[in-house]
Structure formats: C-alpha cells, structure tokens
Length: 328
Image (cartoon, rainbow, N blue to C red; front, side, top):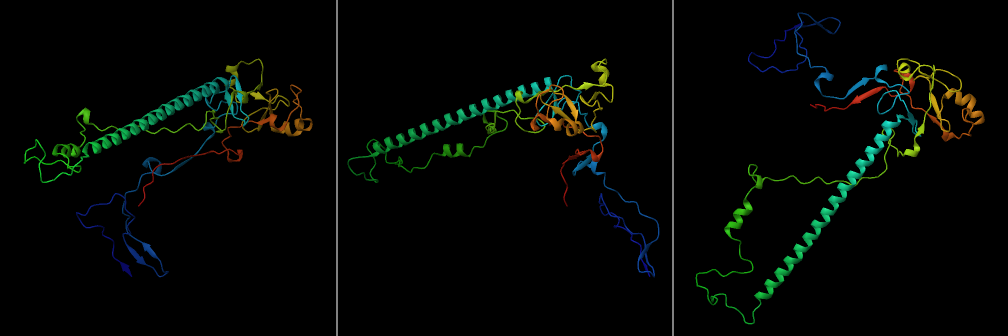
C-alpha cells in the first residue's frame, strides 16, 4: 500500500523559519513499519544553543582554566608575599590589603549616602508637618472670619456688591484657569516641565565588617597568616621559579607540592606541608616541627587547591551561565 508523497505547502504560502523533516514517500511493508523511499527534502535547522544567545550554557573547565595552588585568589598570579585566611584561601598581601581598604571606603561611602538620605527624609517630613499645621491654622482663621452675629439672607446681596455678582460660599467651585492648569501634562521638550525620575531609595549597609571575597565570611587583618613556601631550589630566583611546573616542596618530607597534592599551613611557623605529613607525623605529637610550638586543630589550616582538571580532584570544574530562555 503506497501513500502519496507530501507535496509541501501551497505556492505563495509563507515559509516558517524552523520546520520539521517532511517524509517524501511512505510505503507500508509487511513487517508493520513504514519505509522511506525517494529523495530527502532539505530543511532549515536552528542555530547552535551557544551561538543563539538563549538557554543556560554549561562549560567544562580545562586545566588551563584552573589556578595553581600558590596563586592569589584575586590576582590569579603566583604570590610573592602570600597570606592565608582561616578558611584556607591564599592571597597576595598587597592585593588583599588593597581589597580590604577599598571595601572599608565603599562601606563608609554607602553609610554616608544613607545618612544623607535619611536626613533629607526627616526634613521632608518636618516640612510636611509644618505645612499641614499652617493649613489647619489658615482654615481655622477663615472659619472664624466667616462667623457673624446675625443670620444672612442668601437672596439678599451684601453691601457694596452688585446684584449680578455671584455669592462665594465655602464650597464654591474652582475657577476655569485652575482646572486647565490641573489638566496640564508635563512636557518632554521644555526643560522646566520635564518630569524628573524619583531618587532611588538606598538601603542601610548590613554590616561594617569586610567579608572575604571567596568564602563570604568576615575578614580582619588579624586573621591573615603569613605563608612560607619552601622552594625546590633555593638558588633560583622568583622569576625562575615561576617558569617551573614544580616550584615548592613540603617543609618536612620534601615532597613536591602541586594541585594534586593536598596541602596544609601550620599557623605558628607558616610552613606548608602535605596533608599526609600532617596525618602521619604531626598529629602524633601536635607540635610544629619548624618552630616547636604546640598545635591545635585550628592551627592546621587546609590550603584550598585550584584543582587538576580531572573530576576526581574533588573541585567543581563546571561553569554555568544562565541566559534568557525562549518558551513556546
């Protein structure tokens, strides 16, 4: 049994930009399914999601997009004078101090703007209360002036007024000029009549404490701990170390340090050691092997690594960007 070929839309009909594949010819076979015969019809396809500008895009980060363990979290460059936070985030001392100073200035600026707006609002409320009191006093005086000792005949004109003059009353209608002025709309071409946008209401800063840019927790200068990396070769200068893949070693076992090696910082001495060294050697005596000071659990700070590019490193390696979505 043959089914006639699909001839498509009639001549002159508008074509849709995105269409579905059209079967040119169908033949029912004895096996119970349709077989396509005849040439295929070219159709238009939608562009790729990444190039269309719509939809959420997920990207798998490669090794080149992951920072090294000894790089600053702000500048993403190898640290010359590194410091670490209690949460294990490494920063260049100059970069984190500049960040803290900038945040303090920004918080002070926001607080000053909020106080200025608050003072303006209080002054505006005082002006409105004074205007309301003056209106109330003016209305009281007008009512006092309208009180007479004898009743007035509304059909008898007042002394000194002509019979044709209208008698003003307390509920007299406004003049025609006031009505026209009330109906007047603002003009977008005359500067004096251009409507102005209302000032944005500022919110009071929640806290005056600077927060860590990575963890979001409060950060103080006293929380920063100096870090001392032990280079592989002490005779090589800093520029020569940057060009090497393996730059530093453990201060105790001399094992090479990298993103694939979990590291920890000892608070008393600032030495960087491997986590394996901490578990096997340091936790037995809880004494800093470099300075000899006693240690506590808070004195052993796990250094946040940048990852290796592999999913097994335990670091989130997928970046997500949310964009508008077209719905049918």
